[in-house]
Length: 509
Image (cartoon, rainbow, N blue to C red; front, top):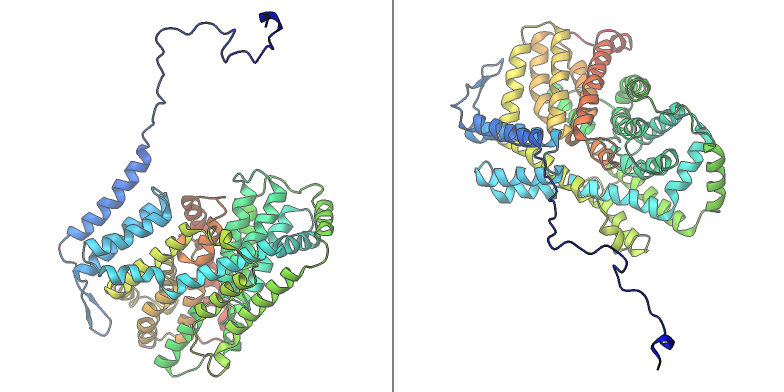
């Protein structure tokens, strides 16, 4: 065949380009050393080493003269906590990995055995969080989240300030009947759906920070109003009954907690409108989009109905189990994990969904449980509580109550709030009568502080769930938590000094 008649193929790659030089030198990518990260890694290690290697610390002596020794393990637990807190706040490594370090250090330095330290990662409270997260996933997969989000936007309108308020009030209202962890897990995907209408790039914004941090904060504020919002209330009332011989009823608790819980919800709304004012006052066309998207969803599906039935029965069972013979001793984690199994049995969720569980958050809470139990079981937390009470014993009744509330506020950011209550209440309620302070005001002020850990992600599960939005860092959470905690302490002081006495609560004997 003549060459001119042959079919012409594609030109070779690089044809027409200048000839390559004989020597090609590739410039490497310059790697910047993150000195800030290295500094905080070193700071955590130095804090742990300095405390661990320090000489024995003096005993704490209670007002009754009882001695409390800070053991080698207790001293090491305090150092380990400072290491973990530094790494958590400044995120020098993923927060879940810092949690693993907590277990590792306990085992290597013989603070607690490895079996005990790592067992806390599988505590029922951690499983409760997993069950709560799965409920949120089921809401998302079934389509209920979008349906709820669009319905809510139709009610609150296009103003971002009203979207803040609507989500905050709805979150707080749900904590009246269900645990705040489960509420946060259920609300979280709804907030993601709302935020997608505000900014589809999912980049951090002031509105996003305020929306998710606000959800975590008000979940705590709402959870103090009834005994159903969290376990800490039942634990505190149990201590109160055992030590004073008096019973605080369900309705008595709500009578005193409703005003302060509701006030905090609205104050937090104002707080976020000041510190994290949304970039846009309104989202033009949002209502119309919500109407169209809601129409597009059509009628409620069988899967949505089934999801609602499973979640509704789960919440109902957890709420009333104490009043049903045979169920009063069943752990709430077992009940909520039953819903997890049902979601997969009815194919609402699949294996792909199981792999999307935020294990970084689960590990974070596992580590929080481990360091909390470590502080508690080594006696370090009790030693701290006694030291603080000794400082307060010579002050007046008002300073004593506020001091106890402040100590609980700090402790509830460090360890689980139930443990903070369990450590503080027995000693504080025993000391209070000697100082002429009514135990009721100590109980209620402590419960309010325990419900609102605004400083650290490990303080409460809603904090960790909100962090999953990637709208804020743990350092930002801490920074905004400082003024919010100051606001909380001011509100507690006003209620202790003026409001609760006016409502009939005894404050002095």
